[in-house]
Amino acid sequence: MDALHGLASGFSVALSPTNVLFCLAGALLGTLVGVLPGLGPITTIAMLLPLTFKMPTVSALIMLSGIYYGAHHAGSTTAIMLNMPGEPTSVAICIDGYPMANKGRAGPALCIAALGSFFAGCVSVFIIALFSPPLAQVALNFGAPEYAAMIVLALIGVSTITGSSTLTTASTAVLGLLLGVVGTDLSTGTARFTFGVESVADGLNFVALTVGLFAFTQIISQLRPKQKQQAVPKKVTGLLPTMPDLRAAWQPILRGTGLGAILGIFPGTGPLIASFASYALERRIAKDPSRFGQGAIEGVAGPESANNAAALTHFIPMLTLGIPAGAAMALMLAALTIKGVTPGPDMMSKHADLFWGIIASMLIGNMMLLVLNLPLIGIWIRLLAVPYRFLYPIVLVCCCIGTYVVSNSTFDIYLAAAFGLIGVVFAMLNCPPAPLILGFILEPILEENFRRALVISHGNLSVFVTRPISAGILAAAVALLIVFCAPAMRRGALAAVIKSA
Amino acid sequence: MFFCIGTFAAIWSTHFSRGSFTNMGPGGFPLILGTLLAVLGLATIVVGLSTGDTPIATIGGKALILIPLSIAVFAATLERLGLIPAIALSVAIAGLANPIVRFREIAVLCVALVVFGAAVFVYGLALPLALFAQR
Image 1 (cartoon, rainbow over the protein chains, first blue to last red):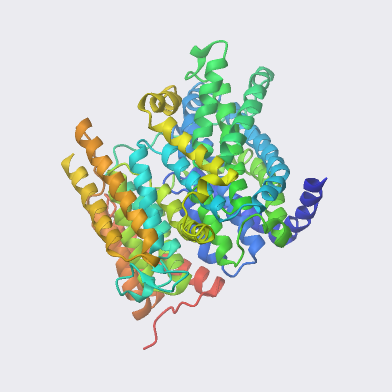
Image 2 (tube, rainbow over the protein chains, first blue to last red):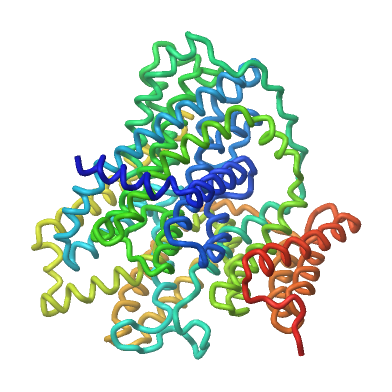
């Protein structure tokens, strides 16, 4: 089989000593930032992106993806122990995980979460391996109109599903697109929106933008006067779940994995929605829904598996189409582009070792995480005691240096500071920054394909609706818009999912 | 509430004028985007006015000024003075942004981060950064 053959060759890449080391480093770092609140995978990847310049491409991507799924893996730890999600995606885990810990059953909860994650991770890796090649085959037939339509779908998906208000998220996405315009026009060489500033002739620096919007904004908003000191973590006694636990958990794990794997592929949905959707599903089909919120193990097993499955299948659109489905994937895309690799349908043939190497490393990384998370849980919990006032200067300095070395320009640091302030305004207005990042990174691809499509059709806009694939994709985008803009439906779909939590 | 709407209007309208200002050709695409953003902004205002209350979370305090300041100081000193002074100064300013200011801790952090920065970035990763600018 093609996929198995590919995976086998991937393992030969991923199992080289250096790559195993980088995989471990990524998993460790990911676990670390996953446990520490106020430090997310997006910030970390943006911070470390410049440091990967000198690394081989495969190792760099292996480490970055390790950080990404490691953080998703570990976010549940603090959710269970402290009722404090390390990552937003773990909010659903809090609901039943923390009550379990209160009943002295933190150990089984953690264990089930780790096992569920591991299982979901392994299944998702195979899903990626199986579905990416055929998807890439389809994508090879994509012309400019199809690509433009795909990007529109991705942006609409993100706008409708993330965040509270479709209008504000759509606005931030378009603002991101506009920011992407800044710089030299690709086809004519005209400088656009540069206002005579030479430093932005190549466009705004992506790392500066992300570091500003995520890292600096986070620091500023974390530093308000604290209400109270965090709760003292409970002691973990008895890690192993009982037989009834396992019996209750295996079905939710399966369902969560399936649900997460499907939702992860679509742009915009991703891990956050997947974990909430899984929680809602488990509650609906449970024989006794009243146990939920009181420490039902199904409420931990399902969402945690869904969360991880979605985190991994999130890679599929980026790897096969070159279209990232979320902000973290946009960063991966940037990492690849910096390395001179353009992700897309032909990546599998042109950079086969890279493609399969990354996928194989995910499997290895998931195994490492299982080992890292279970026996070492005490260490991670102790890390929570590190006060934020020691943490943020480290982040600050690393971010500054990281931003600077991308192009040795102090202008980028000022830019990051400015975007930090913009991010604060965004946070005050309740606008999520992720659509902006996505819009920003997708702008050149969208504009290029949009204009190319119009050149082919001699300026006839109907090209987007007369070609079947492009028309289908656009129809899906419109359907999404209608579903989520109809207020009743919106309340029905998303609010129900979050409310029920 | 009106602050929120006002900010929105300002952001979106400036983008509108910029968008329509450019000519066709390289400006064609930004024009589409600018118009789209203006429409969205207008819709936001309409929705905001009709629903009335818009909650605004207040963030910041002194960190709002001190953190960007410390970043800017880092940027300003990095090439003129070198990495070590840049780290020390920015950490010192950033330390003041914490609600509880403890000078001894800030001093320790400064030293630790200078050592860390120099060891990791200059010696470890061999990035082109000068510890002290030679001039």
